[in-house]
Structure formats: C-alpha cells, structure tokens
Picture (tube, rainbow, N blue to C red):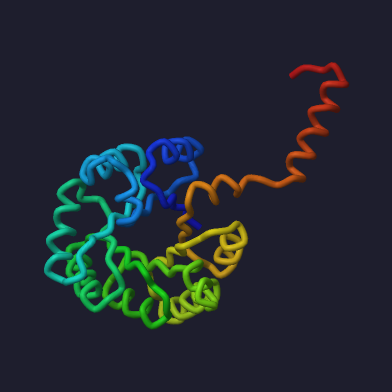
Length: 216
C-alpha cells in the first residue's frame, strides 16, 4: 500500500519525506488557497521534494476549461497527475488526458458507479472520500471494499486512493479492504507510529541497559 501525504506544507512534506515513507502528494483547491505561495511556485517546489505522483486539481467545472487548466499544470511539470472531479465533464477530460498517457486522479468519488466510470475513462487513480461519506451516515470504508471487489472482478488497473482519511482506524480498515493508496494529513500520519506499549517497552529496555553498565 502506498502512502500519499495530503498537504502543500513544504516543511511537513520534507519532514516525512526524510523517513522514506512518502510515495506521493495529493493537493486540492482548498489546500492550495491556504498558502500565500503562488500556484506555479508551490507546485514547482513540490516536484523538487517528492519524486512520486503529485496530484494537482483543476478548478473549472466545464470540459473545455478543464483541458486548458490541465495543460497549464502540465507545463509546470509534465509528470504531474491531473486531478479532476467525478462529473460528466470530468470523465470526458479524463479520457482526453488518458489518451495522451497523462495520469489522472478522479476525485470526489462517493459511489461504486462513479468509480466504475472513472476506470472506464482511463483514470490512473480514483479517490473515494471515506470521512465525508461517514459524515452523512454512509459506510465509507464499505465503499472502498466494494470498489476493490468490483475492480478485482474485471481486472481493472485503476488504483483506489482512499481519501478523507481522518483516523488511525480508517487507515487500518481501508488497508484491510485492499486499497492501493491512502492519502492522509500530516496529523494522522504522525500518529501512525505511536503505541503506548512501544513507549513502555522502550523505557524498560533503556532502564535495564543502563543498570547493566554495558556499552555497545
């Protein structure tokens, strides 16, 4: 399973990238609007820090404008992943870019039907939103499991990118469902290594070693 960091904060991206655990980056208009750095500049900096897939989202809703914006994004770096909304215009734009061997991440996926259409359009990734589905009382983790099952049925290569991951339990659940990728905010990622028994065990080992008077 690949781990993507959902962030445009270069400090936290560099921090986690140093551990060798980051396979890519996801961004969205909300994250982009949260920083003062210009659009082109922040994307350029991201590509120098992370060598994996970096998803950059268009902000237009119509097909023609999505194509224009997608091409502008690719002018910054032609290895970027174009992120498109799961609408009819987005699906049409996905097919356009996929035919040019440009990776597309179809986002705002909330149903198996949408995920099937994204795959048919040639998407490299589809991003089901786990937490947002739970917000309305739906089974977000169940959607990941359903997409995995359907994709396996037909040998579909589109990767499932579990998004709107808010808790460690979400990570465990979607991993067991067979998601290909998770994208997580820095706060949740930082909690993945933590366990109180690890802290207790390490404390005990350190104390016993200090008492022994030995050295490595």
